[in-house]
Image 1 (cartoon, one colour):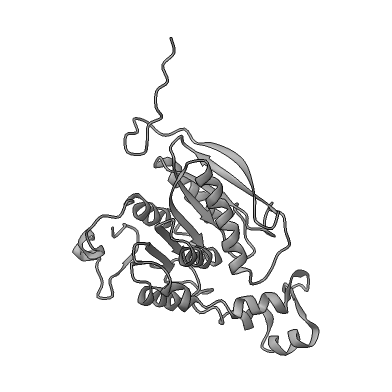
Image 2 (tube, helix red, strand yellow):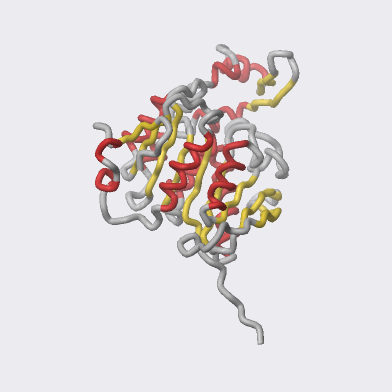
Length: 299
């Protein structure tokens, strides 16, 4: 007679969890195949990780966060948006709404498998996508926005040039090249309008109060200024802000600290009834209800 023993959860683990990586292909509503890697430890709980602009599931923050979650007994899924990495489709410059649709397809796939999605985590543009998702659907109540951009109208001139509106009106597109003159990607007028008409302020106001949002930002982020993180904190009703001192946009030298603060927030699911400041050590609470850290976690 054989006896099946239940897999230990992250709350009753005896030893380190065995993490099994599986390639998963999910079709979006446009018929494109989205390719992802599932880090399975045998529990129903799952965190979905979303990459940033012209990036992929193989970017260091995505890989490291998936590994860190797995070590804590939480399964994770990192995937490529359409037109990025291994996924089908063509790359588009704006595409915020369509990437939110991709995320919707992923969420529905795992709900169909009876998984419990405890958090959506997005880095950079992925942070904007998870916030947009939260504003449209109220089915995942923990959102982590890492280095997301609040002021989407900024940063365009740096990529496309000062006269980008005139050029795109004249030609219908702008080809972006690197410093060596090599073609990188094409920005169409439609995709530019998508970015310009994506209203982050309105998006944040639509997020329900029962949805917990955690913004993590580096104090030395030169791509997206830390003031963007402060803007999210001022508008989203149920929000925590954590600023990592000295960290850049990719958290190049702060991967461990990034993983620690994200894990701590995700592990606090389901939300407790106490307010945010009641759960923090007094030394970590700032006047604006945010936290800053160097190496230890202020949680």
